[in-house]
Length: 593
View 1 (cartoon, helix red, strand yellow):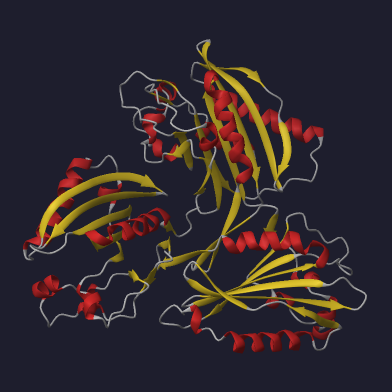
View 2: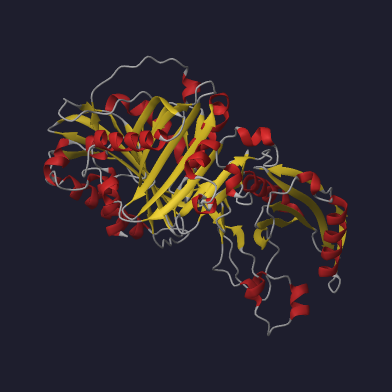
């Protein structure tokens, strides 16, 4: 653990600074503590107060104190030291190289994958060992600088929402003055170490400590379901593949199945139990609450409309299946709840509930939801003894309510699937090509070879309606492999040169059409989620027609380019732009955490 802690301390101990700015407080204190949610490297979510904002757009080298820049030099890639998230006060202005700088407050979040196991209770010796390791690593990170540690506060070892935590704080001084207060909290799941750190000048510490304390207990984990959805779950529960499934199967069903069968083949795709769930006697397991998730293949060209679900037919089929599962057991169905059809993130969802009971035993409450996507059906079920059902139902509702639909980009990654749009690979691409492009390309060409990797249209779009075909908005995604080190390397070519190249390309493409470039709206480059994003926005128009907005984001790694393009008329821009921004921001490479 010591080496892992040392690396994290290196990432978060860099002292940031900036040009001092004064901002008026436009809102009250309560407004500044309204919480917002942010993804943490696709392995969880964290809430943060609205008074601060995440600023991964700022080149990290500009944020590193001169003391460390002297030590690290100019040739090092400072981006490799970037924390997962960096929060500054709203209105923060990034420092400019060469300006005189002063200290300022910030909060960082860093993440490390690994295997972490802690006993229920740490001995005093174990606590002292951890404390000494952390103190030594903090001190080691200051070597070669003029920083010194002035004062350590006592360490705190706790459980926060089921996760083991270590919290510590200290005062750091530069050249005998400029006191900085630092406080860190480590949160440990079985496979993840999360560190939240606040560093602030003494005069700002009290205010920022309020922000920090509001963030620490909000961490929740996320999980990807077959690249079609993601869910968040509270850390009081955990996905427990470590528990042999045979021990979790009810004795009534074991009587039917016997001892020789492989019970693991009945294990759900995901199974959530209480984080501290333990089996002390494998021959007698007390009733327990659990949430299971399964995925069943579906084969629909279009997303089903909720009104197309025949609820009476589904109701009878489900009741018959449930009854057949318990026919050879001592269980009886004591109550059925309502069967309802709703929507979640633009998908139809069937929900139902029932209670089963065995004579002389506590009743068991079961609730289930089936979410119908085009290629898969997600089934989520909660089962719990009646006495703890309310607690488990709350957890179930939290997980189900966090359902976020995903769209896979084959071999590359995923994006969030907007609820108001639908991926329409079912439409012949020639139908969707605009007349200006057809004039340019002709009739004999195979238009399918121009089909993007993914094509999103409004859910209500009707390809058989000539009026809709004449003018419609779309978001397309294309993806290709190659050598893109020149565009992915921030030091290889200036942003001005890159902008000129992309603008020239746009102008060339418009030359053989009747479109005119009305305005080159904006251009920006930023690092996000392990990739380099190059984005530009422009407006084109045919004389006498409504202007069209084009937004393009190229997402680069050294060997890949993923391009997301929005095309829409001026009157529909307010609908399409938020959907586009959501998709761009949500892009994650395969395996990116």
